[in-house]
Image 1 (tube, rainbow, N blue to C red):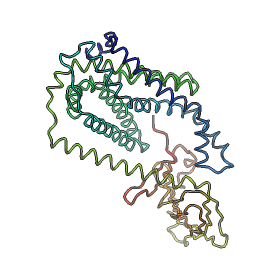
Image 2: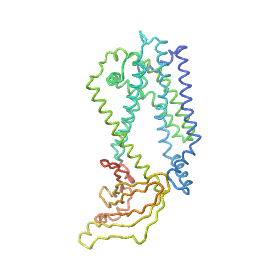
Image 3: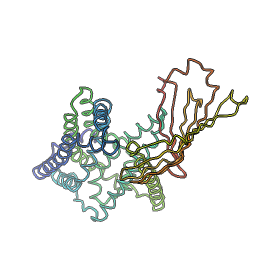
Image 4: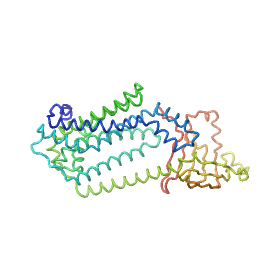
Length: 428
C-alpha cells in the first residue's frame, strides 16, 4: 500500500521542496540534454572516427554505410535501451541535489519526528563507491552469464539484468532518508532484502517509463534524435518523481529499517572479499579482451605479400585412415607491413566448424606479432583437420541453419575466449 500511495507523494511538496525539485529537474534536463545534443549532432563524426580506427582510408565510405544501416535496423533498439541505463548512471552525478530535495521534502511534509543528521562526507563517498562497485560487478558478471548462445543462459541473463536495474533504482531512491538517519548500505540492503516487493516494485515503477518510451519510439520507427529526446525526457521525470516518492516510502519504513540489525562483522568482511574478488576477476577479463581486440583492430590496415617460393601444402599419406578424416597444412612466409601506430598481435587460436553439433573441420593460424611502424615476415602455418565421415549426411550439409562456427582465442594463459561467428537459430 505504501508503494502505491508513494506515487502521490509529490502532492505534498511545499515551497522549499518545490524549489529544490525545480533545481533538480533543470540540472537533470541540462545534463541529459547536453549529452543528447552532442550524441545527435556528432553521430556522423563518431562513425567516421570508428571507421578511421578500424579500416583503411579507401574503405571509409563503405564503413559509414554499413554502420548507418546497422543503426537504422536492430542497432536502434540496442542504443535506445542502453541509453536508459547510461542516463540513470549519468544522473547519479547529481546526488548532492537529490539529497537536498529529499531532505527538504522530509522536513516540509513532516515525514519523520526528528531531522536526520546524515553520515560524514567521507563516509558517504565510501558508501556510494561501494554501492557502485556492487552494481558494476553484477552487470559485468551478467554479461558472462549471457555471453554463450544458449537460450536458457540468455533468458537467465535478461532476467538478472532487469532485477539489477530494478534493484539499483530502488536502492538509489529509497536510501537517502535512511542514510540521513544513520543507516549504512549494508544494513539498508539487508532491510530491503526482507521487503523484495518494495525494492523491486519501486524500481520497476520508476524504471519502466523510460524503457517503455524507448520501445514506443522503436515501434513507431521514430528518428534516432526523437528517440533520444523521448527517452531522456522520460528519464528526467522518472528520476525526479522517484526522489520524492522514495523519500515518502522510506519514511513509512523507517522504524522497521532502524530495527534491522547490522550484518555481523564477519559476514560483511566475507561479502566484501567476495565482491572484490569478483570485481578484480571481471576487470582482468574485460581488460584482457579489450586489449586483444585492440591488437586486432589494425589487421585490415596492414599490407600483406605472400612469398611464392615459400608456399607449401602438406598432404596426408594414403591410408585407410583417410576414410575417417584428413589433416592438411598450408605453410608460407608472409611479409606484413604495419603502417599504424598500434601493435598487431594474433594469439593462439582455433576455428571449430560443426554441423548439428558434430565437428566437421578444425583450423588454426600461427600466432604472430607485428609491432607498430615495422615490417615482419613471419612463417605462417594453417593446419586444417577435416572429418570426412560427415559427408554421409549428404544434402543435409546444405542447410546452413544447422551449422555453427566458433573462433577460440587464447586471451590469457588460463582463459580462452569463444567468439561465436555462426550460431544456429534457437528451437521454437
